[in-house]
Image (cartoon, rainbow, N blue to C red; front, side):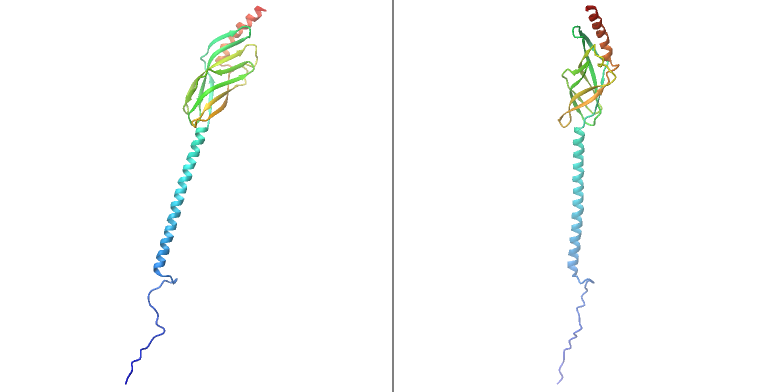
Length: 203
């Protein structure tokens, strides 16, 4: 009687392909997908972060631009009046200031006031909206004390302007206006000479 013996090979192994690192293929694919998603999320976050920083920078630059004020002021040749008060030795002129907006944003120029011994300059209450690079003319009253030696000295007269910027904030800015040799000085000479002559004659 012959019995068949089943031989079991203890060295037999599972010949299914395996990864060299021992990982299951499905898990490896899942790991790669996760890495791709993480990289994509990082890239999207970086892009969105860059956009946000750029928008903040643009907003900040716009605020700074709207808040900045730069202007130039010059006496104009258009002068009238020249009325004098003999008792006080004072001449009052109706003049103009040309104001140029040299800043990057529109401004509204309101009050304009300047004073030193011998001369006073004051606006007549009108305001001017000036676009960047634009020029506006402000009517002013110029009061000159004829006996003063400092009214039209070579040192510029500081004029203080009240300005509303594009962000609707009120600010003050000063600009040195050269009055020596201006139409204001020329127009004050004759009435001042008259007042001086009248004063000597009266005395």
